[in-house]
Image 1 (tube, one colour):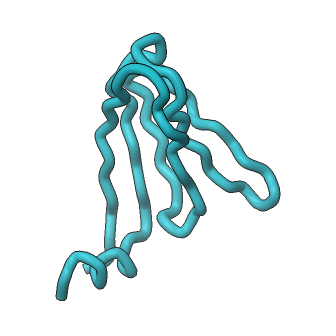
Image 2 (cartoon, rainbow, N blue to C red):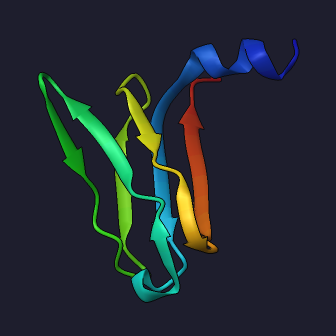
Length: 76
């Protein structure tokens, strides 16, 4: 099974902000919560975990570089 097939088993997604917020503009993690869109904290070292089925995106980075560690938990 290729990479595409494995995404169907993802249950939990997580991201850790590695860049300081002053090092870049844009690059906000946005999560859809029903009709609302919530913006995750940009504080370096912060962890955001959410169900992998949650609609989400990162807005375009317009200045600097945004580093983040991304991980998934998936069913075997």
